[in-house]
Length: 131
Image (spheres, rainbow, N blue to C red):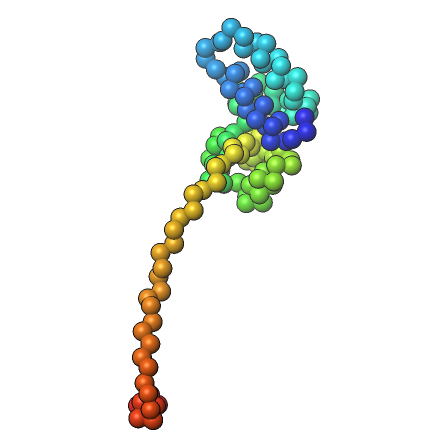
């Protein structure tokens, strides 16, 4: 799989299907197809977590792991935003999934500077008062 973010999305979809309480008719085929797309070392780590009763992927929101609720270093978040590597939570070991966030709408910034009144004086008398 070329794109790491696509691989994590696939892993997250796999987790959603495997932890779903109601089994859909075609879910076994879909699970097999998803597992075939994930590299073996990543799938093995995911399976170890699932075997111990844990989910293998956690959503990363507001710089916090969605599974253990611990703060994730900003450097890890930035690496995930570059989308060229997968990262695990340093606390619980789950793969971190950073969803695509829509670009925030621009917020108008109020003008906090009051307009400056300029007073024009003419002649020497005005200059003497200014000093």
